[in-house]
Every structure is written in C-alpha cells, then in structure tokens.
Amino acid sequence: MAKLRQKNPRAVRQAEEVRGLEHLHMDVAVNFSQGTLLSPHLHNVCAEAVDAIFTRQEDVRFWLEQGVDSSVFETLPKASEQAELPHCGQVGDRGKPCVCRYGLSLAWYPCMLKYCHSRDRPTPYKCGIRSCQKSYSFDFYVPQRQLCLWDEDPPG
Image (cartoon, rainbow, N blue to C red; front, top):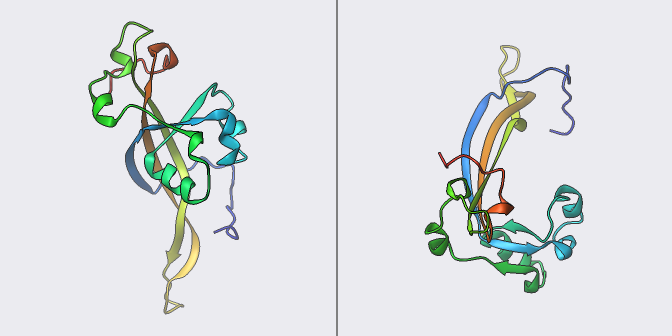
C-alpha cells in the first residue's frame, strides 16, 4: 500500500467501511519513566502522562516474551473488583476511585487494498486503497476521580 498515492490528498474523505466500536479494558499500569523500554516514541506520544500509562494483560505478556523486565508493570485491581466501582462520570467526590473511560475514533484510515474488475482483464487488479472507520473505548482504574476529569458523561 505504500506505493499507492492519493490523487487528491487534501480531499475530505468518507470511510467505505465502518468497523464499529472496540471496547478495551486496560488493567495494567506501566511505569512511565521506564516506558522507553517498550517504545522510544512513548514519551512523545504520551507527553501528558505524569506517572503511568495503561495497557492490557495480553500486551504485557508480549513484552515479557520480548525480554522486558516485569518491574515496569503494575497490575491494577482485578476486573471483578473494578466492576463494583462506578464510572468516573457518576462520581461526585474527586478523591474517590473510579473507572475512567476514554474514547477515540479514527474517522478515516487506509485499511486494505481495493481491487477493481475490468472487461479488458481476466483477473481483478489493484486500483486503490479501501478506507475504514474504527472507534475505541478504553476503561481503566484511577485511584482518584480528579485524574479523570474529561469523563463527565455517564457510560452509554
């Protein structure tokens, strides 16, 4: 796909395929000061993080297999314990623990090659890039409501 170029790169595009919402439960904290062990880009991408960033158990297993020291990760309260906690949008006291939700939507991204058919050619040929839309919802534990001030609405 790297060789395919857009004819009009400034055009506002609509996704051809909507891939729906993926809900991810982030149940492990990563020590931000040691984050470069996971990716050299982490400090730039997550510049606003103060102490920790969050990930999933399956991601931790991958990094442990790659030789990353387990001291980088801190397991958060189990999902069953977190299920008893309210979402931060429902908590009035800023000092209470809650489950924070962060949403992200990618309105348009190239997701696969597009193949076209022609009377002149017996087989389909590469003729462009198919575009997709994808949304994510991340839930993670915070020890104080004040660490999740953007989560103002109750979960939908």
